[in-house]
Image (cartoon, rainbow, N blue to C red; front, side, top):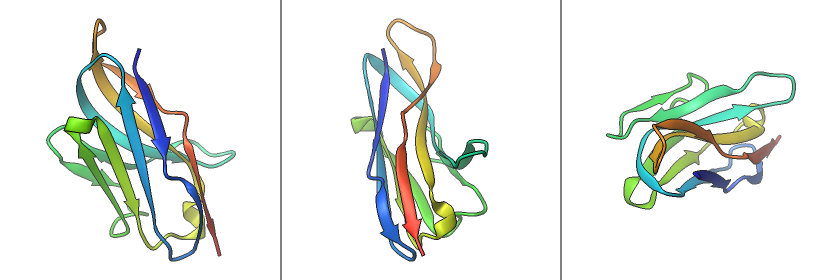
Length: 120
């Protein structure tokens, strides 16, 4: 069984910064693509940023230049550094990862989410 646990969310004023973390645990052999998604009530979950196993990154246009995704493969951990936060960044942020674990084939997993609230 693989678990993804997010942390680092909270309340911050507009213009501030937060750093989210996502730790994967379980009988993990390897982690392929990882990503951060976010969702607000009544809207679909949207991709914020993604990172491949070799470090290639991709960002939503709305966060380019403000957010930075990274990962530490030795620690099975992914990060999202969020700077210059705006009220419209308020959402529940979810971690997603494609994990190869014993004894399964590679599968996608989701964390339970961490709430980010940006006040104006």
